[in-house]
Length: 328
Figure 1 (cartoon, one colour):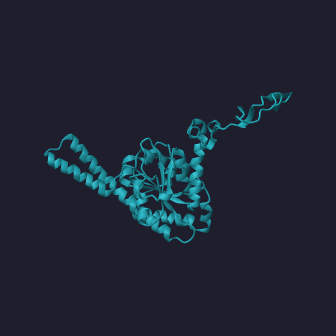
Figure 2 (cartoon, rainbow, N blue to C red):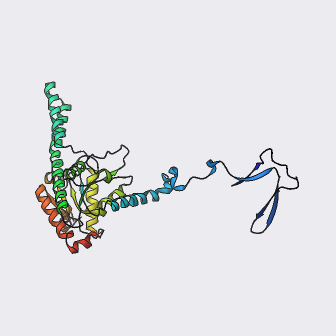
């Protein structure tokens, strides 16, 4: 921007007929303007008048108009960090964030029983607390199994020759996600946490490799990264979030959207048999019997380990499997 300002005092006064000639050119005319000799032309000195660079404008970047930029950032930033970390394939663990570790669940039950002993009588409130604590102990069994399966898979992955990593990946929070990261950490392996930003901040568990913590705003971008790198998935007992992830994986495999093959283990027969009646889908004709073959159900760490390693070795540790790794 150009502006006119008075000449500095003390300078030689110029002839009033002199001055500064400014020629303004437009498409159809030329106009000559003669400015007063005591005026001078300068660039604007007030830096606040200069517009902010768009990519530094946080108000714009947080606005609806910049939504596509934010979405793209949740693709490009993780892609670059994963490339630098040389991570190409993962084993994804899904499961409840509410599960306690066996130690925590046992302590919680002991505290409830102690309260009952002090009270001398079991109130409805204490009975409800005891039932919840006993259920937490049952669920904690799967936390323990997730730790062990993750540990064994990480040790197996580290023993492989060649360019294979099969990094354990979870949603990065507590419960079964923590168990997965914990098992990989116990085996001395790297482990990923794809965290999601929630209204009440979702904490990242301490077992995720610090350089492999990723934080997302959009659920669909987080799901993209779960599936894009996954070479196998393990679904532990969980709630709505786990169901959402599990059924989306089944839909993608059923519709053959991923061109790669992904073994899926549904872990915890007692839980899944009670929560979902898969055979009813077939009886009602909403899925075919063959559709239920896209996942393998088991209640054993050793069985899950044998199934997953056998599938992954056959799919990806052969020359033909190297081509599969490139497919998404």
